[in-house]
Image 1 (cartoon, helix red, strand yellow):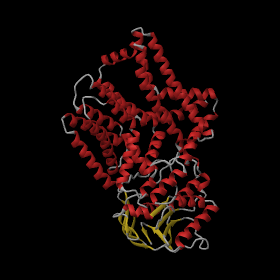
Image 2 (tube, rainbow over the protein chains, first blue to last red; image 1 turned 45 degrees about the vertical axis):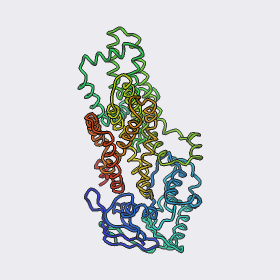
Image 3 (cartoon, one colour; image 1 turned 180 degrees about the vertical axis):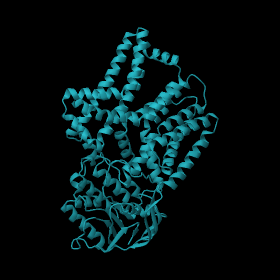
Image 4 (cartoon, rainbow over the protein chains, first blue to last red; image 1 turned 90 degrees about the vertical axis):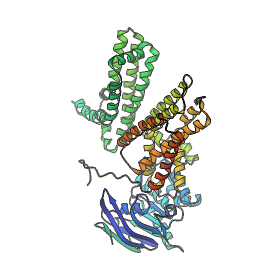
Length: 208
Length: 378
Protein backbone atom coordinates (compact mmCIF):
# COMPACT_ATOMS: atom_id res chain seq x y z
CA UNK A 1 0.00 0.00 0.00
CA UNK A 2 1.15 3.53 -0.77
CA UNK A 3 0.64 6.06 2.03
CA UNK A 4 1.01 9.78 1.61
CA UNK A 5 0.92 12.10 4.63
CA UNK A 6 1.17 15.90 4.76
CA UNK A 7 2.47 16.05 1.21
CA UNK A 8 3.06 19.47 -0.28
CA UNK A 9 5.00 20.77 -3.22
CA UNK A 10 5.95 24.36 -3.86
CA UNK A 11 7.61 26.04 -6.82
CA UNK A 12 9.18 29.37 -6.08
CA UNK A 13 7.11 29.66 -2.84
CA UNK A 14 3.90 28.98 -4.79
CA UNK A 15 1.92 25.99 -3.56
CA UNK A 16 1.31 23.58 -6.43
CA UNK A 17 -0.26 20.66 -4.61
CA UNK A 18 -1.10 19.65 -1.05
CA UNK A 19 -2.28 16.20 0.01
CA UNK A 20 -2.91 15.86 3.78
CA UNK A 21 -3.77 12.13 3.70
CA UNK A 22 -3.96 9.63 0.87
CA UNK A 23 -3.76 5.84 0.83
CA UNK A 24 -3.49 3.88 -2.41
CA UNK A 25 -4.30 0.18 -2.38
CA UNK A 26 -2.97 -2.29 -4.93
CA UNK A 27 -4.71 -1.99 -8.27
CA UNK A 28 -4.98 0.70 -10.88
CA UNK A 29 -5.53 4.30 -9.80
CA UNK A 30 -6.33 6.82 -12.51
CA UNK A 31 -5.26 10.38 -11.68
CA UNK A 32 -7.21 12.94 -13.67
CA UNK A 33 -6.66 16.66 -13.93
CA UNK A 34 -6.39 19.47 -16.40
CA UNK A 35 -3.07 20.58 -17.83
CA UNK A 36 -0.87 22.32 -15.27
CA UNK A 37 -2.72 21.04 -12.21
CA UNK A 38 0.34 19.19 -10.90
CA UNK A 39 -0.06 15.56 -12.00
CA UNK A 40 3.49 15.25 -13.30
CA UNK A 41 4.83 17.12 -10.27
CA UNK A 42 3.07 14.61 -7.99
CA UNK A 43 4.38 11.68 -10.02
CA UNK A 44 7.96 12.96 -10.04
CA UNK A 45 7.78 13.60 -6.30
CA UNK A 46 6.49 10.07 -5.69
CA UNK A 47 9.27 8.69 -7.89
CA UNK A 48 11.87 10.60 -5.86
CA UNK A 49 13.03 12.61 -8.86
CA UNK A 50 12.17 15.98 -7.34
CA UNK A 51 12.07 16.83 -3.63
CA UNK A 52 8.85 17.45 -1.71
CA UNK A 53 7.56 17.95 1.82
CA UNK A 54 5.78 15.24 3.79
CA UNK A 55 5.97 11.49 4.20
CA UNK A 56 5.55 9.03 1.38
CA UNK A 57 5.85 5.28 1.95
CA UNK A 58 5.39 2.15 -0.09
CA UNK A 59 4.57 -0.81 2.12
CA UNK A 60 6.10 1.03 5.11
CA UNK A 61 9.32 1.83 3.23
CA UNK A 62 9.72 5.60 3.49
CA UNK A 63 11.07 7.84 0.75
CA UNK A 64 12.75 10.11 3.30
CA UNK A 65 14.11 7.53 5.74
CA UNK A 66 15.04 4.78 3.33
CA UNK A 67 15.58 6.40 -0.07
CA UNK A 68 17.42 3.47 -1.66
CA UNK A 69 14.95 0.74 -0.67
CA UNK A 70 12.09 3.07 -1.66
CA UNK A 71 13.53 3.67 -5.11
CA UNK A 72 13.96 -0.06 -5.57
CA UNK A 73 10.18 -0.40 -5.20
CA UNK A 74 9.01 2.58 -7.26
CA UNK A 75 9.32 2.84 -11.03
CA UNK A 76 8.32 5.74 -13.22
CA UNK A 77 7.62 6.34 -16.88
CA UNK A 78 7.62 9.93 -18.09
CA UNK A 79 4.90 11.55 -20.19
CA UNK A 80 7.37 12.78 -22.79
CA UNK A 81 10.59 10.81 -22.28
CA UNK A 82 13.82 12.30 -23.62
CA UNK A 83 17.16 10.50 -23.49
CA UNK A 84 20.65 11.40 -24.71
CA UNK A 85 20.59 10.89 -28.47
CA UNK A 86 23.77 8.78 -28.58
CA UNK A 87 22.53 6.15 -26.12
CA UNK A 88 20.79 3.00 -27.30
CA UNK A 89 17.79 1.29 -25.74
CA UNK A 90 20.22 -1.44 -24.76
CA UNK A 91 22.41 1.02 -22.83
CA UNK A 92 19.45 2.40 -20.93
CA UNK A 93 17.62 -0.88 -20.27
CA UNK A 94 20.77 -2.63 -19.06
CA UNK A 95 21.75 0.36 -16.89
CA UNK A 96 18.33 0.81 -15.29
CA UNK A 97 17.75 -2.96 -15.16
CA UNK A 98 20.96 -3.56 -13.23
CA UNK A 99 20.15 -0.83 -10.72
CA UNK A 100 16.60 -2.10 -10.27
CA UNK A 101 17.74 -5.70 -9.83
CA UNK A 102 16.15 -7.00 -13.04
CA UNK A 103 17.60 -10.08 -14.69
CA UNK A 104 18.64 -9.84 -18.34
CA UNK A 105 15.83 -12.29 -19.15
CA UNK A 106 13.29 -10.00 -17.54
CA UNK A 107 14.72 -6.97 -19.35
CA UNK A 108 14.46 -8.77 -22.68
CA UNK A 109 10.95 -10.01 -21.94
CA UNK A 110 9.54 -6.50 -21.38
CA UNK A 111 11.44 -5.16 -24.38
CA UNK A 112 9.96 -7.92 -26.55
CA UNK A 113 6.47 -7.38 -25.14
CA UNK A 114 6.50 -3.70 -26.04
CA UNK A 115 8.41 -4.04 -29.30
CA UNK A 116 11.57 -2.31 -28.07
CA UNK A 117 13.66 -5.27 -29.24
CA UNK A 118 13.16 -4.12 -32.84
CA UNK A 119 15.38 -1.08 -32.26
CA UNK A 120 17.28 -2.26 -29.19
CA UNK A 121 20.79 -1.43 -30.46
CA UNK A 122 19.92 1.75 -32.34
CA UNK A 123 20.71 5.17 -30.82
CA UNK A 124 17.82 7.12 -29.25
CA UNK A 125 18.42 10.00 -31.65
CA UNK A 126 16.86 7.87 -34.40
CA UNK A 127 13.64 7.09 -32.44
CA UNK A 128 10.17 8.48 -32.94
CA UNK A 129 8.24 9.77 -29.91
CA UNK A 130 6.30 6.47 -29.83
CA UNK A 131 9.51 4.45 -29.74
CA UNK A 132 10.86 6.59 -26.89
CA UNK A 133 7.57 6.08 -25.07
CA UNK A 134 7.75 2.30 -25.43
CA UNK A 135 11.31 2.30 -24.11
CA UNK A 136 10.29 4.39 -21.11
CA UNK A 137 7.35 2.06 -20.41
CA UNK A 138 9.51 -1.07 -20.70
CA UNK A 139 11.93 0.38 -18.13
CA UNK A 140 9.04 1.15 -15.76
CA UNK A 141 8.35 -2.58 -15.32
CA UNK A 142 11.93 -3.63 -14.55
CA UNK A 143 12.82 -5.30 -11.26
CA UNK A 144 10.17 -6.00 -8.64
CA UNK A 145 8.34 -2.70 -8.27
CA UNK A 146 5.51 -2.31 -5.79
CA UNK A 147 4.41 1.02 -7.26
CA UNK A 148 4.56 1.80 -10.98
CA UNK A 149 3.81 5.37 -12.02
CA UNK A 150 2.84 5.85 -15.66
CA UNK A 151 2.45 9.44 -16.81
CA UNK A 152 0.20 9.54 -19.90
CA UNK A 153 1.15 5.99 -20.92
CA UNK A 154 -1.20 5.78 -23.90
CA UNK A 155 -0.03 8.90 -25.73
CA UNK A 156 1.78 8.17 -29.04
CA UNK A 157 1.47 4.38 -28.60
CA UNK A 158 0.35 2.24 -31.52
CA UNK A 159 -2.49 -0.25 -31.06
CA UNK A 160 -0.26 -3.30 -30.66
CA UNK A 161 1.88 -1.67 -28.00
CA UNK A 162 -1.18 -0.30 -26.23
CA UNK A 163 -2.63 -3.82 -25.99
CA UNK A 164 0.71 -5.19 -24.78
CA UNK A 165 0.90 -2.48 -22.13
CA UNK A 166 -2.60 -3.21 -20.89
CA UNK A 167 -1.76 -6.93 -20.66
CA UNK A 168 1.34 -6.07 -18.59
CA UNK A 169 -0.72 -3.83 -16.31
CA UNK A 170 -3.31 -6.59 -15.80
CA UNK A 171 -0.51 -9.08 -15.12
CA UNK A 172 1.00 -6.82 -12.45
CA UNK A 173 -2.28 -5.97 -10.72
CA UNK A 174 -3.98 -9.35 -11.00
CA UNK A 175 -1.27 -11.71 -9.73
CA UNK A 176 -0.70 -13.26 -6.33
CA UNK A 177 1.03 -10.13 -5.11
CA UNK A 178 -0.80 -7.28 -6.81
CA UNK A 179 1.01 -3.98 -6.99
CA UNK A 180 -0.17 -0.38 -7.21
CA UNK A 181 -0.24 1.29 -10.59
CA UNK A 182 -0.77 5.02 -10.71
CA UNK A 183 -1.49 6.46 -14.12
CA UNK A 184 -2.65 9.66 -15.68
CA UNK A 185 -4.44 9.90 -18.98
CA UNK A 186 -6.37 12.53 -20.83
CA UNK A 187 -7.88 9.76 -22.89
CA UNK A 188 -10.93 7.94 -21.58
CA UNK A 189 -9.99 4.53 -20.25
CA UNK A 190 -12.36 1.86 -21.55
CA UNK A 191 -13.42 -0.32 -18.56
CA UNK A 192 -13.68 -3.27 -20.94
CA UNK A 193 -9.99 -3.04 -21.70
CA UNK A 194 -8.57 -1.82 -18.40
CA UNK A 195 -10.45 -1.93 -15.14
CA UNK A 196 -9.63 1.08 -13.00
CA UNK A 197 -10.02 0.54 -9.28
CA UNK A 198 -10.02 4.15 -8.25
CA UNK A 199 -10.26 7.55 -9.88
CA UNK A 200 -8.69 10.63 -8.30
CA UNK A 201 -8.92 14.17 -9.57
CA UNK A 202 -6.43 16.96 -8.95
CA UNK A 203 -8.09 20.35 -8.83
CA UNK A 204 -7.12 23.69 -7.28
CA UNK A 205 -4.01 22.29 -5.62
CA UNK A 206 -5.67 19.34 -3.91
CA UNK A 207 -6.64 15.79 -4.78
CA UNK A 208 -10.00 14.09 -4.30
CA UNK B 1 16.79 42.29 -52.60
CA UNK B 2 17.05 38.64 -51.50
CA UNK B 3 20.29 39.21 -49.65
CA UNK B 4 18.56 42.01 -47.74
CA UNK B 5 16.01 39.43 -46.62
CA UNK B 6 18.51 36.79 -45.55
CA UNK B 7 21.26 39.07 -44.23
CA UNK B 8 19.53 40.54 -41.15
CA UNK B 9 18.16 37.11 -40.09
CA UNK B 10 21.60 35.51 -40.31
CA UNK B 11 23.24 38.44 -38.56
CA UNK B 12 20.73 38.40 -35.69
CA UNK B 13 20.68 34.59 -35.38
CA UNK B 14 24.39 33.89 -35.50
CA UNK B 15 26.51 37.02 -35.22
CA UNK B 16 24.59 39.23 -32.76
CA UNK B 17 23.65 36.31 -30.55
CA UNK B 18 27.26 35.10 -30.49
CA UNK B 19 28.46 38.40 -29.09
CA UNK B 20 25.51 38.76 -26.70
CA UNK B 21 25.96 35.28 -25.22
CA UNK B 22 29.72 35.70 -24.91
CA UNK B 23 29.65 39.27 -23.64
CA UNK B 24 31.16 38.20 -20.31
CA UNK B 25 34.00 36.41 -22.09
CA UNK B 26 34.83 39.43 -24.27
CA UNK B 27 34.56 41.74 -21.30
CA UNK B 28 37.01 39.54 -19.39
CA UNK B 29 39.47 39.35 -22.31
CA UNK B 30 39.35 43.10 -22.94
CA UNK B 31 39.72 43.77 -19.20
CA UNK B 32 42.62 41.36 -18.86
CA UNK B 33 44.41 42.68 -21.94
CA UNK B 34 43.78 46.38 -21.28
CA UNK B 35 44.19 46.26 -17.52
CA UNK B 36 47.30 44.13 -17.23
CA UNK B 37 49.46 45.36 -20.13
CA UNK B 38 50.38 48.83 -21.30
CA UNK B 39 50.41 49.91 -24.97
CA UNK B 40 54.17 49.45 -25.25
CA UNK B 41 53.93 45.96 -23.82
CA UNK B 42 51.27 45.05 -26.38
CA UNK B 43 53.58 46.23 -29.15
CA UNK B 44 56.48 44.27 -27.62
CA UNK B 45 54.37 41.12 -27.41
CA UNK B 46 53.14 41.51 -30.99
CA UNK B 47 56.73 42.10 -32.15
CA UNK B 48 57.71 38.87 -30.39
CA UNK B 49 54.89 36.97 -32.16
CA UNK B 50 55.94 38.11 -35.63
CA UNK B 51 59.71 38.18 -35.07
CA UNK B 52 59.98 34.54 -36.26
CA UNK B 53 57.43 32.87 -38.56
CA UNK B 54 57.22 29.86 -36.21
CA UNK B 55 56.13 32.14 -33.34
CA UNK B 56 53.01 33.20 -35.24
CA UNK B 57 51.71 29.74 -34.32
CA UNK B 58 51.14 30.99 -30.77
CA UNK B 59 48.36 33.46 -31.70
CA UNK B 60 47.21 30.97 -34.36
CA UNK B 61 46.64 28.41 -31.62
CA UNK B 62 44.45 30.85 -29.67
CA UNK B 63 42.59 31.75 -32.88
CA UNK B 64 41.95 28.05 -33.45
CA UNK B 65 40.36 27.85 -29.99
CA UNK B 66 38.26 30.89 -30.85
CA UNK B 67 37.26 29.21 -34.11
CA UNK B 68 36.15 26.10 -32.17
CA UNK B 69 34.08 28.38 -29.94
CA UNK B 70 32.33 29.89 -32.99
CA UNK B 71 31.74 26.50 -34.60
CA UNK B 72 30.34 25.00 -31.37
CA UNK B 73 28.04 27.99 -31.02
CA UNK B 74 26.84 27.76 -34.63
CA UNK B 75 26.12 24.03 -34.25
CA UNK B 76 24.09 24.64 -31.12
CA UNK B 77 22.05 27.44 -32.69
CA UNK B 78 21.42 25.39 -35.81
CA UNK B 79 20.10 22.46 -33.77
CA UNK B 80 17.60 24.56 -31.79
CA UNK B 81 14.03 23.63 -32.76
CA UNK B 82 13.14 27.32 -33.04
CA UNK B 83 15.84 27.72 -35.71
CA UNK B 84 14.44 25.07 -38.05
CA UNK B 85 13.33 27.82 -40.44
CA UNK B 86 16.96 28.76 -41.17
CA UNK B 87 17.24 25.78 -43.51
CA UNK B 88 15.14 27.74 -46.00
CA UNK B 89 18.44 29.44 -46.80
CA UNK B 90 19.56 26.28 -48.59
CA UNK B 91 17.17 27.24 -51.42
CA UNK B 92 19.12 30.43 -52.16
CA UNK B 93 21.70 30.45 -55.01
CA UNK B 94 25.04 28.93 -53.94
CA UNK B 95 27.08 32.07 -54.66
CA UNK B 96 24.77 34.22 -52.60
CA UNK B 97 24.75 31.72 -49.73
CA UNK B 98 28.52 31.58 -49.58
CA UNK B 99 28.87 35.35 -49.56
CA UNK B 100 26.24 35.72 -46.85
CA UNK B 101 27.80 33.05 -44.66
CA UNK B 102 31.26 34.52 -45.24
CA UNK B 103 29.97 37.83 -43.89
CA UNK B 104 28.59 36.05 -40.81
CA UNK B 105 31.94 34.30 -40.26
CA UNK B 106 33.72 37.63 -40.79
CA UNK B 107 31.54 39.31 -38.16
CA UNK B 108 31.93 36.50 -35.65
CA UNK B 109 35.71 36.50 -36.14
CA UNK B 110 36.03 40.28 -35.84
CA UNK B 111 38.06 40.29 -32.57
CA UNK B 112 40.58 37.88 -34.13
CA UNK B 113 40.73 39.90 -37.33
CA UNK B 114 41.40 43.12 -35.43
CA UNK B 115 44.29 41.55 -33.53
CA UNK B 116 45.49 39.92 -36.75
CA UNK B 117 45.54 43.33 -38.45
CA UNK B 118 47.56 44.66 -35.51
CA UNK B 119 50.09 41.83 -35.95
CA UNK B 120 50.27 42.54 -39.69
CA UNK B 121 50.98 46.20 -39.01
CA UNK B 122 53.77 45.33 -36.58
CA UNK B 123 55.20 42.76 -39.01
CA UNK B 124 55.14 45.40 -41.77
CA UNK B 125 57.01 47.85 -39.54
CA UNK B 126 59.79 45.38 -38.78
CA UNK B 127 59.87 44.08 -42.37
CA UNK B 128 58.87 40.49 -41.55
CA UNK B 129 57.18 39.67 -44.87
CA UNK B 130 57.13 35.92 -44.19
CA UNK B 131 55.29 36.45 -40.90
CA UNK B 132 52.85 38.76 -42.70
CA UNK B 133 52.12 36.04 -45.23
CA UNK B 134 51.68 33.37 -42.56
CA UNK B 135 49.39 35.53 -40.37
CA UNK B 136 47.30 36.40 -43.45
CA UNK B 137 47.07 32.72 -44.36
CA UNK B 138 46.10 31.79 -40.78
CA UNK B 139 43.31 34.37 -40.73
CA UNK B 140 42.04 33.27 -44.14
CA UNK B 141 42.04 29.61 -43.10
CA UNK B 142 40.06 30.49 -39.97
CA UNK B 143 37.49 32.47 -41.97
CA UNK B 144 37.15 29.79 -44.64
CA UNK B 145 36.79 26.99 -42.10
CA UNK B 146 34.09 28.82 -40.16
CA UNK B 147 32.26 29.65 -43.40
CA UNK B 148 32.55 26.11 -44.70
CA UNK B 149 31.37 24.62 -41.43
CA UNK B 150 28.38 26.99 -41.32
CA UNK B 151 27.55 26.09 -44.93
CA UNK B 152 27.70 22.34 -44.18
CA UNK B 153 25.82 22.80 -40.90
CA UNK B 154 22.94 24.51 -42.65
CA UNK B 155 22.78 21.83 -45.33
CA UNK B 156 22.91 18.94 -42.90
CA UNK B 157 19.15 18.95 -42.27
CA UNK B 158 18.54 17.82 -45.84
CA UNK B 159 20.86 14.85 -45.45
CA UNK B 160 20.09 11.52 -43.97
CA UNK B 161 21.85 10.94 -40.66
CA UNK B 162 23.62 7.63 -40.64
CA UNK B 163 25.17 5.93 -37.67
CA UNK B 164 28.84 5.23 -38.31
CA UNK B 165 29.93 1.60 -38.41
CA UNK B 166 32.19 2.03 -35.39
CA UNK B 167 29.27 3.40 -33.35
CA UNK B 168 27.04 0.56 -34.56
CA UNK B 169 29.70 -1.93 -33.53
CA UNK B 170 30.09 -0.33 -30.10
CA UNK B 171 26.32 -0.19 -29.59
CA UNK B 172 26.05 -3.88 -30.45
CA UNK B 173 28.93 -5.13 -28.34
CA UNK B 174 29.37 -2.75 -25.38
CA UNK B 175 27.34 -2.03 -22.30
CA UNK B 176 28.41 1.39 -21.12
CA UNK B 177 28.98 2.22 -17.45
CA UNK B 178 27.82 5.54 -15.98
CA UNK B 179 31.27 7.19 -16.22
CA UNK B 180 31.46 6.17 -19.89
CA UNK B 181 27.98 7.61 -20.50
CA UNK B 182 29.02 10.93 -18.99
CA UNK B 183 32.32 11.00 -20.84
CA UNK B 184 30.60 10.37 -24.17
CA UNK B 185 27.94 12.95 -23.41
CA UNK B 186 30.35 15.71 -22.43
CA UNK B 187 32.64 15.01 -25.39
CA UNK B 188 29.74 15.07 -27.83
CA UNK B 189 28.11 18.19 -26.44
CA UNK B 190 31.06 20.27 -25.21
CA UNK B 191 34.05 19.03 -27.15
CA UNK B 192 35.49 22.54 -27.62
CA UNK B 193 35.12 23.33 -23.95
CA UNK B 194 36.75 20.08 -22.81
CA UNK B 195 39.58 20.52 -25.30
CA UNK B 196 40.24 24.12 -24.21
CA UNK B 197 40.15 23.16 -20.51
CA UNK B 198 42.51 20.25 -21.10
CA UNK B 199 45.01 22.28 -23.11
CA UNK B 200 44.97 24.99 -20.43
CA UNK B 201 45.37 22.45 -17.60
CA UNK B 202 48.17 20.57 -19.31
CA UNK B 203 50.08 23.74 -20.18
CA UNK B 204 49.85 25.09 -16.63
CA UNK B 205 50.73 21.79 -14.94
CA UNK B 206 53.54 21.02 -17.37
CA UNK B 207 54.95 24.56 -17.09
CA UNK B 208 54.92 24.50 -13.28
CA UNK B 209 56.52 21.04 -13.14
CA UNK B 210 59.27 22.26 -15.48
CA UNK B 211 59.92 25.36 -13.35
CA UNK B 212 60.84 23.08 -10.45
CA UNK B 213 63.88 22.02 -12.51
CA UNK B 214 65.32 25.56 -12.46
CA UNK B 215 64.24 26.96 -9.10
CA UNK B 216 63.67 25.52 -5.66
CA UNK B 217 60.01 25.59 -4.61
CA UNK B 218 58.01 23.70 -2.02
CA UNK B 219 54.70 21.93 -2.66
CA UNK B 220 52.74 25.20 -2.48
CA UNK B 221 53.66 26.31 -6.00
CA UNK B 222 52.34 23.15 -7.59
CA UNK B 223 49.33 23.14 -5.22
CA UNK B 224 48.45 26.69 -6.32
CA UNK B 225 48.73 25.72 -9.98
CA UNK B 226 46.73 22.58 -9.31
CA UNK B 227 44.01 24.55 -7.49
CA UNK B 228 43.83 26.97 -10.40
CA UNK B 229 43.55 24.23 -13.04
CA UNK B 230 40.92 22.27 -11.12
CA UNK B 231 38.95 25.46 -10.60
CA UNK B 232 39.01 26.24 -14.33
CA UNK B 233 37.74 22.68 -14.90
CA UNK B 234 34.51 23.48 -13.07
CA UNK B 235 32.50 23.87 -16.31
CA UNK B 236 32.88 20.09 -16.66
CA UNK B 237 31.42 19.66 -13.17
CA UNK B 238 28.52 21.88 -14.19
CA UNK B 239 27.98 19.57 -17.16
CA UNK B 240 28.03 16.56 -14.82
CA UNK B 241 25.30 18.00 -12.58
CA UNK B 242 23.27 18.79 -15.67
CA UNK B 243 23.79 15.31 -17.11
CA UNK B 244 22.96 13.44 -13.93
CA UNK B 245 19.96 15.48 -12.87
CA UNK B 246 18.45 16.72 -16.12
CA UNK B 247 19.73 14.98 -19.25
CA UNK B 248 19.47 11.53 -17.62
CA UNK B 249 17.11 12.44 -14.79
CA UNK B 250 15.90 8.84 -14.53
CA UNK B 251 19.06 8.12 -12.51
CA UNK B 252 17.47 10.02 -9.62
CA UNK B 253 14.81 7.29 -9.44
CA UNK B 254 17.39 4.51 -9.32
CA UNK B 255 18.16 2.73 -6.04
CA UNK B 256 21.85 3.63 -6.02
CA UNK B 257 23.34 4.21 -2.55
CA UNK B 258 24.84 7.64 -1.91
CA UNK B 259 28.34 6.23 -1.48
CA UNK B 260 28.15 4.47 -4.82
CA UNK B 261 26.81 7.60 -6.50
CA UNK B 262 29.83 9.51 -5.15
CA UNK B 263 32.13 6.81 -6.49
CA UNK B 264 30.44 7.04 -9.90
CA UNK B 265 31.03 10.79 -9.83
CA UNK B 266 34.68 10.37 -8.90
CA UNK B 267 35.07 7.63 -11.52
CA UNK B 268 33.64 9.94 -14.19
CA UNK B 269 35.96 12.77 -13.16
CA UNK B 270 39.03 10.53 -13.11
CA UNK B 271 38.12 9.33 -16.60
CA UNK B 272 37.78 12.90 -17.91
CA UNK B 273 41.02 14.05 -16.28
CA UNK B 274 43.10 10.99 -17.01
CA UNK B 275 45.46 12.92 -19.38
CA UNK B 276 46.21 15.49 -16.65
CA UNK B 277 46.90 12.75 -14.10
CA UNK B 278 49.25 10.98 -16.53
CA UNK B 279 51.00 14.27 -17.33
CA UNK B 280 51.45 15.00 -13.62
CA UNK B 281 52.74 11.50 -12.93
CA UNK B 282 55.28 11.67 -15.77
CA UNK B 283 56.55 15.16 -15.01
CA UNK B 284 56.18 15.31 -11.25
CA UNK B 285 59.05 17.37 -9.80
CA UNK B 286 61.86 15.28 -8.32
CA UNK B 287 62.10 17.78 -5.46
CA UNK B 288 58.70 16.63 -4.17
CA UNK B 289 57.92 13.24 -2.71
CA UNK B 290 55.23 10.59 -3.16
CA UNK B 291 53.10 12.01 -0.34
CA UNK B 292 53.09 15.38 -2.12
CA UNK B 293 52.00 13.67 -5.34
CA UNK B 294 49.09 11.96 -3.57
CA UNK B 295 48.11 15.23 -1.89
CA UNK B 296 48.08 17.08 -5.22
CA UNK B 297 45.93 14.40 -6.91
CA UNK B 298 43.55 14.18 -3.97
CA UNK B 299 43.30 17.97 -3.76
CA UNK B 300 42.16 18.05 -7.40
CA UNK B 301 39.47 15.45 -6.78
CA UNK B 302 38.37 17.09 -3.53
CA UNK B 303 38.02 20.50 -5.20
CA UNK B 304 35.91 18.95 -7.97
CA UNK B 305 33.73 17.14 -5.44
CA UNK B 306 33.30 20.30 -3.38
CA UNK B 307 32.23 22.22 -6.50
CA UNK B 308 29.75 19.48 -7.33
CA UNK B 309 28.23 19.52 -3.83
CA UNK B 310 28.08 23.31 -3.90
CA UNK B 311 25.99 23.09 -7.09
CA UNK B 312 23.71 20.48 -5.51
CA UNK B 313 23.21 22.75 -2.53
CA UNK B 314 22.68 25.92 -4.53
CA UNK B 315 21.54 25.34 -8.11
CA UNK B 316 22.44 28.32 -10.26
CA UNK B 317 23.12 29.49 -13.79
CA UNK B 318 26.50 28.80 -15.33
CA UNK B 319 27.45 32.50 -15.34
CA UNK B 320 26.75 32.83 -11.63
CA UNK B 321 28.59 29.61 -10.89
CA UNK B 322 31.61 30.92 -12.82
CA UNK B 323 31.73 33.98 -10.57
CA UNK B 324 31.78 31.78 -7.46
CA UNK B 325 34.48 29.57 -8.98
CA UNK B 326 36.60 32.59 -9.85
CA UNK B 327 36.37 33.89 -6.28
CA UNK B 328 37.02 30.42 -4.81
CA UNK B 329 40.08 29.90 -7.05
CA UNK B 330 41.57 33.21 -5.94
CA UNK B 331 40.84 32.36 -2.31
CA UNK B 332 42.48 28.94 -2.66
CA UNK B 333 45.61 30.41 -4.24
CA UNK B 334 45.90 32.99 -1.47
CA UNK B 335 45.43 30.57 1.43
CA UNK B 336 47.89 28.10 -0.08
CA UNK B 337 50.37 30.93 -0.57
CA UNK B 338 50.04 31.81 3.11
CA UNK B 339 51.04 28.28 4.11
CA UNK B 340 47.62 26.86 4.93
CA UNK B 341 48.40 23.12 5.20
CA UNK B 342 47.41 21.24 2.04
CA UNK B 343 46.29 18.18 4.01
CA UNK B 344 43.95 20.35 6.07
CA UNK B 345 42.53 21.93 2.92
CA UNK B 346 42.06 18.45 1.54
CA UNK B 347 40.32 17.28 4.70
CA UNK B 348 38.00 20.30 4.70
CA UNK B 349 37.06 19.83 1.03
CA UNK B 350 36.44 16.10 1.60
CA UNK B 351 34.34 16.75 4.70
CA UNK B 352 32.25 19.39 2.90
CA UNK B 353 31.77 17.05 -0.07
CA UNK B 354 30.76 14.04 2.01
CA UNK B 355 28.39 16.06 4.18
CA UNK B 356 27.00 18.08 1.28
CA UNK B 357 26.43 15.10 -0.97
CA UNK B 358 24.63 13.18 1.76
CA UNK B 359 22.47 16.14 2.65
CA UNK B 360 21.71 17.78 -0.66
CA UNK B 361 21.57 15.11 -3.35
CA UNK B 362 17.94 14.20 -2.80
CA UNK B 363 16.98 17.82 -2.13
CA UNK B 364 18.38 19.06 -5.42
CA UNK B 365 15.95 20.80 -7.70
CA UNK B 366 16.54 23.50 -10.27
CA UNK B 367 13.37 25.43 -10.83
CA UNK B 368 13.23 27.63 -13.88
CA UNK B 369 10.22 29.95 -14.00
CA UNK B 370 8.25 29.81 -17.25
CA UNK B 371 9.47 32.18 -19.94
CA UNK B 372 7.60 35.47 -20.09
CA UNK B 373 8.56 36.10 -23.71
CA UNK B 374 6.16 36.23 -26.62
CA UNK B 375 6.02 32.42 -26.81
CA UNK B 376 6.12 31.93 -23.04
CA UNK B 377 3.50 30.21 -21.02
CA UNK B 378 2.34 31.41 -17.67
